[in-house]
Amino acid sequence: MPLEFHSLSHGRIAFGFFNIDTDLLLLEKYFFFAHFFCNTIEIIASCKDHKVDNFVLSGYVIEKFEDIGNLMGAIHGIDLRGFIGAVYQLFPFPQRPEGFKQKLDGKTNRAVVY
Figure 1: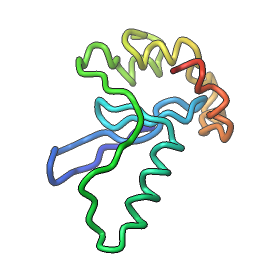
Figure 2: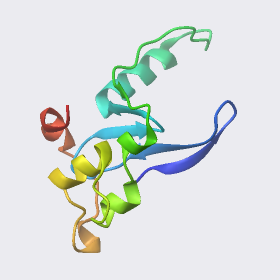
Figure 3: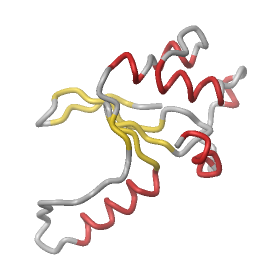
């Protein structure tokens, strides 16, 4: 579940996994798979002077809010518009609360959400 964070440059932002059946992360309007994120963090951490001027994080940008979708509406199955809604159509929120756990094999569903 994405959490709200307070950033110095962009105010309040959402970041995190948004569907337990995938390893896709969202950062506001940016979507990227966990392995790309981890590889980028590894590159940043390896910089000796702790300064990173330029790096590439492979992913997707969805500019229009309505094209992103409504996370809470998708979770409840009442608003399946946009990209998030499309992912929840493929992988609905679990019926029972104990089923709400991030799946360790989320990478197996990457091809479906590319």
